[in-house]
Image (cartoon, rainbow, N blue to C red; front, side, top):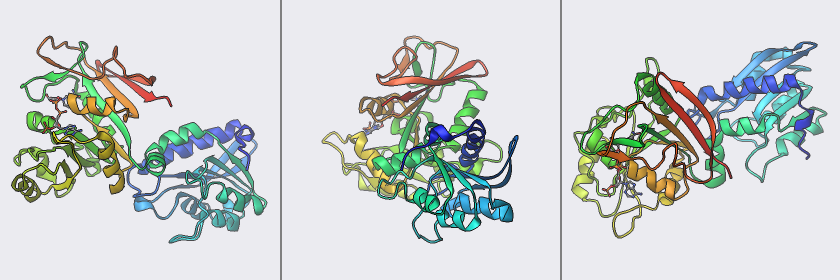
Amino acid sequence: MAESASLATEADRRFMAAAIRLSLWHQGLTGENPSVGALVVRPQAEGGTIVGRGVTALSGRPHAELQALREAGDAARGATVYATLEPCSHIGKAPPCADALVAAGVARVVIATLDPDKRVAGRGVSILEKAGIEVVTGCLEAEARRAMAGFLSLKGRGRPFLTLKLAVSPDGMIGRRGAGQVSITGDIARRAVQMMRVEHEAIMVGVNTVAEDDPFLTVRLAGLEKRSPTRIILDPFARTPPVARLFAEAARHPVLILASEKASRRQADDLREKGAVVQTVVSDYRGRFDPREVLRVLGIIGLKSVLLEGGAETARRFVDAGLVDRISLFVGTSTFGQDGIASPVTETAVPPGFEIVGSGRYGDDRLIEYERID
Ligand SMILES: NC(=O)c1ccc[n+]([C@@H]2O[C@H](COP(=O)([O-])OP(=O)(O)OC[C@H]3O[C@@H](n4cnc5c(N)ncnc54)[C@H](OP(=O)(O)O)[C@@H]3O)[C@@H](O)[C@H]2O)c1
């Protein structure tokens, strides 16, 4: 089956961009499924009218296309459907979306990206084409793949997509040794970080950050508190203080501690009693995990996206292992001087293989975003 992105019109790209935005609504909330967006559009001379919208439902079912068709009803006959992922062709808990599109009598289906599973890629398209439906593939493919990067990472690499977020002072420091939590950025940037947490399935930090900063690592944006992701602590010796504040909400927002086989059983049990799940990860003789193994374990758990929030040592290990996919670097306004903790990533020391993909301003602070170019 040939890719046919060149057949996509300007209107197609506009509707697909809207479908991609819609897909983001349930990012991180669709279990092992990707969050897909779908629109049913009645074509008109001036572009078209949206008559049905769908985003993969919470926990993954029903799929976006079925919801969009349901909303469109009879108006789906002869319409164009925009789907950010190839409509499914396999019979699972529900009939395949490709069959539902045929039954609804749609005339045209525009798809951003094919199924990442090579064994079934193209099957949904061929069901549609055999039924005489015009199919366009590859419309805004790069944008759609970015929107479902977590799903594609887990499917393709067996591990979550890893974003490193760090706040640095203009002189490249992420904190001050022994000073606990120090403000590097202002309130607006801190809120932006909370929004990033909403968009990820888990936050990960090294144990020193918990011991020194005593962070909550939750989302405290009004109305979005429920979207706090799983908190993961890399803690080979199970030395997370049982009085740490992040245990306060362990019943609602899970705390996962990755410990080595060298951890004291009593300390691990104390942390379990506080509500944490303590998972043993293979380590070397010093109790160090291979960062690859950490991500493999998180992949087995089914996590699609993880926000690595430091500290310096933890970030450095993942950067050095070449496992960071995206970097969100907030740069504050006050310098720290010599007693600062040096950041493994600064504006002038970006790991090789990354390029700037975006930048912005949050109050007085700046955000620079980098992505790995493969
Ligand atoms: N500005 C920011 O964005 C930001 C963000 C977070 C933290 N911080 C600051 O950073 C400072 C803490 O940073 P840090 O570098 O001292 O410590 P850290 O990165 O928070 O924690 C390092 C510890 O985590 C464990 N760990 C990490 N990766 C591991 C691996 N692959 N295998 C085994 N264990 C692993 C080790 O524990 P063991 O020592 O038990 O082996 C290691 O010593 C704090 O002052 C905090 O304020 C700043």
